[in-house]
Image (cartoon, rainbow, N blue to C red; front, side):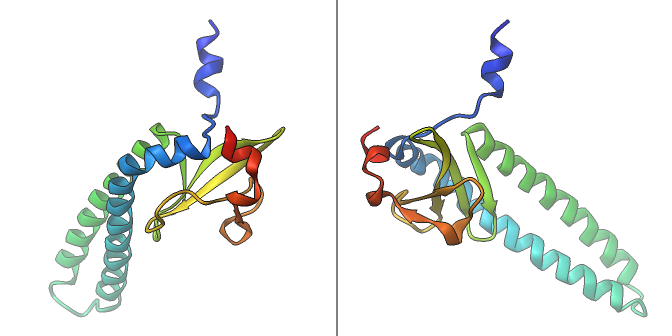
Length: 145
């Protein structure tokens, strides 16, 4: 009976646990940023094809692009779901920005990671974003956990 409560609980990470997940998450983030960039390219191509409605091939090109966009969307959805299963939230798929829920005293916060960083080194309040990141070294109680 209590299982449903547990399944809805947010997974909390310590900085050490978040860093231990990075080797698993990095390939997913690389694929996510690649697929997101491809999505933007396909969106731009579709706009061009729709504007060039005089072309005989434009309807065929448009249908082909729509199929490719649908496939891309399905791939992106799978990546978002895979990352969510690991307990992280995607904040910006274009740059591979993710957050891990963490505890800072009595406060729920995010540990923040961006693809390309060597490890999780920053945190921010839930209502703040990437610009509000603060270094973990200034939070010794979060590092000890």
